[in-house]
Amino acid sequence: MTTMQNGAYEAFRSIDVPEEKAVKAAAALSKRDDDVGILKADMSLLKWMMGFVLAFQIDIFLKMFIH
Image (cartoon, rainbow, N blue to C red; front, top):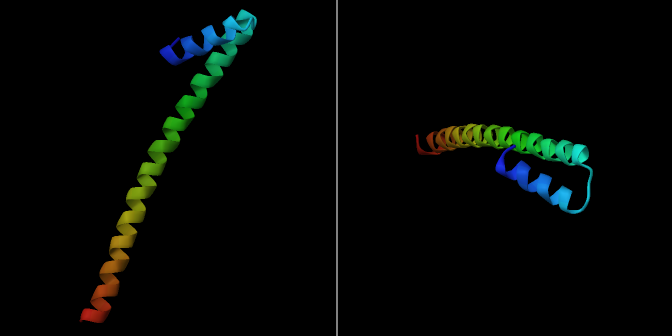
């Protein structure tokens, strides 16, 4: 178990959750963390793409009125 999973496992065990359920809950929290990491990476890519599109549109706008 990772540190976060271990902490979640210990928290569940401290409130008398059965060991099997505590392990499953800690594993589910770890899966959620992995999914959040993937979403953050995708969001970073989308931010770069939107920045490029915005810069391209500003460039076209300026060329239309300056030319």
